Amino acid sequence: MVFFEIDLKSRTPIYEQIYKKTVELIIKGELKENDQMPSVRALSAEISVNPNTITKAYALLEKDGIIYSLSGRGSFVAKVELEKVADFLLADFDRCALDALESGISPSILVDRINTLSKKTDIT
Image 1 (cartoon, rainbow, N blue to C red):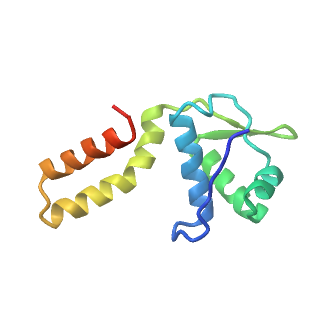
Image 2 (image 1 turned 45 degrees about the vertical axis):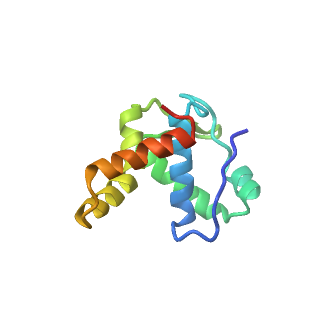
């Protein structure tokens, strides 16, 4: 079963955290096309969150074409273009990078920072 970690102290609403985590799991290949998502009830119990919050996250994921639902069977990962879901995750990065650039931080410093982070996480 896929593990959804939620930060209850975060300013980011829980349904957005679920959305982002789902997208992240798809990008990492931990969720693949046609994989079944946890049921609303199961995920609600797993992360101790109101089922309505899970339903809201799933509704947004479905609206954006990231998951699909089959009546009586549950929700499943749709066929998605990785660039499309990556753009969602990179939106936060873009805002932060733009803020940094507007504050006078040079692009080379940002590139160096990304390279440093990449080395720390063993991602190339």
